[in-house]
Image 1: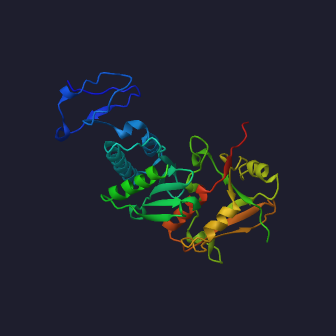
Image 2: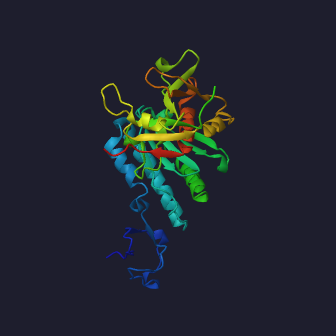
Image 3: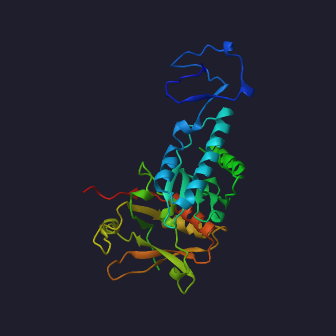
Length: 168
Length: 144
């Protein structure tokens, strides 16, 4: 039987690969109210709801030409969330990712904050898909952007998450 | 030419608005860069209304399409002109964004946001995101 931690907010928790495994005798975590997060286990970021809305939107609204790339980008974002969670970084200030269907057939994912926006536009022509970060004057009027390159988006998404965490 | 403090961007439907009603997606401010929509002066346009008086918002929310349905079922978003002016002067926008009045027979408030038609699509979407970022408030359609 696999040992797991059940927290009262009911986030499912999954065991890390055996490389990180420590003796289960060191922990007596059988509480439903409080306890210490066991580093051998990490909450699935997908279960926090930050990407649920966006995933559902893709399945319900995305044109067939954008579904695969949209889900691939969401998977990279999910992995980046997990990376930060494993590092113990608080992601509670990050809003859920919003999703919109543009008239030009693209899917737009956006994190919307008072002082900045981070967006990913998934185009029917994948060569045109990109990301951007725009901020208001308070954060320096940043206008940054680039292309989304298949199999090579993780570093830019981690950097964008870092910006969001630092400025929320 | 004198312009008021705000322009009003009609929201076609609720799909442009976040679930909490506080924000709009940047796609609300997308420009259509298709050549056939380009003007002779090198710009493409998207319609707005200017908030010239207290009636402008109610006028906007009452506007109807040719089929008789309410045109802006998602309500309307206010964009301060001072914020647009700030954007226009940013080096990365570099004058590619502008605005104008364009009164119509049935709409004295009508105007346009303008973007250079040779703006790359990626830059267009950044400009749209910057406009969405400075939306100061959203007014929903009154409930029937």
